[in-house]
Each structure stands twice: as structure tokens, then as C-alpha cells.
Image (cartoon, rainbow, N blue to C red):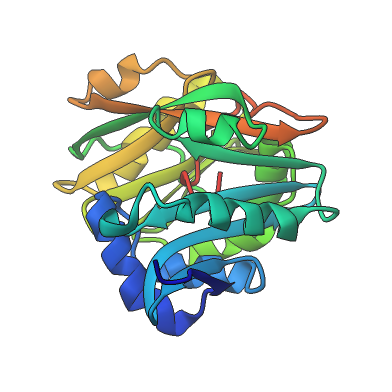
Length: 277
């Protein structure tokens, strides 16, 4: 069997990586791949056989926490140990750089990651629906510093570079809720996907502002099909989604390796994406 070469993933690999992503039925765009490469250019890896890209994985580092994402293998080359090789390279890259590593897995992927020492931390629910405009209050002037501060408090690590890039790539203007002369109470972002628009992250200090955040965002995305990945332990009730015609599509399992680990805060209503946390 031809030898698998594991090397860095480059921007020139994105068209081939998109084919792997499409085969898996995922929602990421070329912009998502470029963002991952810009955040951690030395931590994104490609598996190549006979000059052809057959697998990928990415890493993103936030302070003492790292995220592993985009573990993809060509359907014709699965069950040949390629994903394991990619994981080993990613873990070796992160060794000594961080104390904690997390990822979001499917139920099928969970036992695979358990072999690498990952344990279940929490659950994520993917909901999907068609955005119907419901005008909500809570307009606020964009304040990236306040967004970064609130996100750091909720996420438990500094991912300001990611947040800044997500703001730059927003499909619609970010939604912020802020009391008069008070601190930022919550924010919501959305970006384009190849299948549906993706809402996330959504972060709120107060459960009373979540409905406003959601309705303001849905109003901007009126008529579009959307995904939102909800932290099951968040301060929101998913009836907010079901009342708006959304249905639960699937579960994801948030897994962790190393420690000490800070579980995803209930302030995180919706994640930024399975590939970045």
C-alpha cells in the first residue's frame, strides 16, 4: 500500500480539502479553511497519498487551551489508520504548548478519540431552521473590545484573534445587547456556510437577553436556512428555538484531554463551530 505522507496543510490544498468536507456533508467554506490556516499555520496538517490529499486535521490554540478540528479522511481511504496518524501528529504538535485539548465529536467518533485519552465533557445540540424575521430591541454600537472581554469571560480562554476574524467575516452585522451606560450583556455572530448560514458564537451574561439576541439575528437572516450549535448546559431553554420552528438535527460530544479543564460556561449559548470551539 502506498505510503501516507503527513505534512503541513497549505492554502493551495483548500480546493482538495473542500472536496473532503463535501464528502462528509459538512458546512465549512473556503473562508473557514483560510481562517484556520491563518490562526495556526504550523498546526494544520494534510495526509497525502501519491500526491493526492486524502486527509486533514487542524489545531487552534487559545492560551493554555487548544482545539482540534477538521479531522477528515477521503471515504475511499478510511479504516486505514490515516485519522490516527493525523491525530498523533496534531497531539505531538500541541505537546508542551497547552495544558488542555478539546474537540467536538460525533457519536461515531467518540470511541476513536477515547483511544487517544479524550473524555466526555458536555453535549452540543445542532438545531436547524428557516430564519423568520422577528424584530428585537437591543441595538448597540459595535465594540470589539467589549465583545472580546465578554467572550474571554464566557469561554475561559483568550480567543480574541478568532473573534476578530469572525467579526470580519460576518454574514450580517454582529448583534450586541447592552444596557444604557452598562456593560455588554451579550453578542451574536453569523457567517456563511456551503449548506446553511451558521449562527455562532452566541454569548450572554443574562438569560433575559438571549431572546433579543436570537430575534435580532434571525431578523437579519430572514428567509435563510440556518444552523445553530447550542451548548446543552447553557442558560437558554431550547424552546426558544422550537417556538421559532427550529428542529434538533443531531448531537455532538464535547471531549477533553489533559487539564485542569474549565467546562464550557453556561454563558456560551451557541458555540463558534465544532472546528474551533
